[in-house]
Length: 127
Length: 127
DNA sequence: GTAAGTGTATTAAATCATCTGGTACAGTTT
DNA sequence: AAACTGTACCAGATGATTTAATACACTTAC
Picture 1 (tube, rainbow over the protein chains, first blue to last red):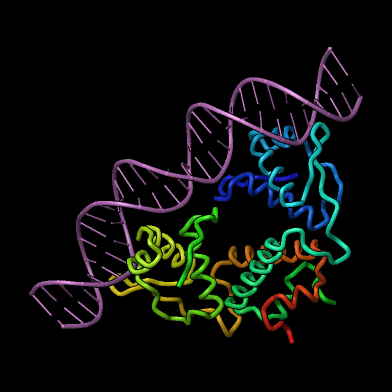
Picture 2 (picture 1 turned 45 degrees about the horizontal axis):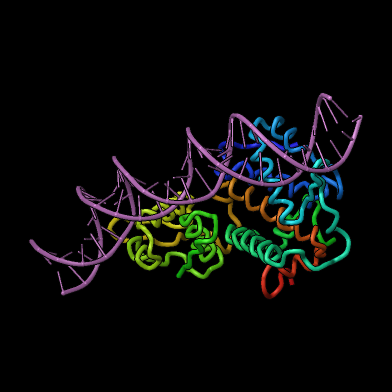
């Protein structure tokens, strides 16, 4: 499900958070889908369960997943079709900042706006 | 010139790197412009000069600035008008990954592609 | 030439985030 | 009852980060 990169300077729990979040927002994981249990993923990744627990806890605090004691953890229902106010306005601002930072540096490398827009996904966007 | 956020979990030298890189790629600092000396910026930010030195050294290794012993540090000449091969292909791949991650999560929040494109800078892009 | 300022390098110590290991409790499922 | 689940806590080890204190060679200004 996920792979860890120990050369990466980012903490393990951060890599897990980013990996799961990407699968959730990209649709690779459907809303309400059951996630591997904390202990199961810990065995799968060969790391301590506490590290998975931290990743899950923060993802839940950020609204991407929810957990039911005794049952398991699941991807959140929400986001997708209709425009709705972001659960966390600070998160949306952060995303816009990252978007603009990436665009600015790609421009610095000489890419034209049309090329950047074409990079937004594999198939092209706004068409 | 820069401000530090001690609540931020990111290391100080990373905040300095990101801040300077943003000013360089956005054009806030012109190519060849002189940067504050390591010691001067250390005094300005009230931190140890070694921390500034680390940020400058890594920015130089990544091609955003260059330093002349005895003289000072300057923003690099390069990037801008013409399309050219990225000095670091891995860096360009990383930027594309960040762009797509931000776009995917903004879509998850319900933003339409046209809205995302309009967010790419303050005035709108591709028009 | 002297002084001040510059980048660069090195070493030691302190601090903090991160990760691990172990244990425990209450809930759910079979 | 047994196995699984999320949750919580604590102690210890490890590594990145930051500070502190020097030192050297070079450039610029006086």
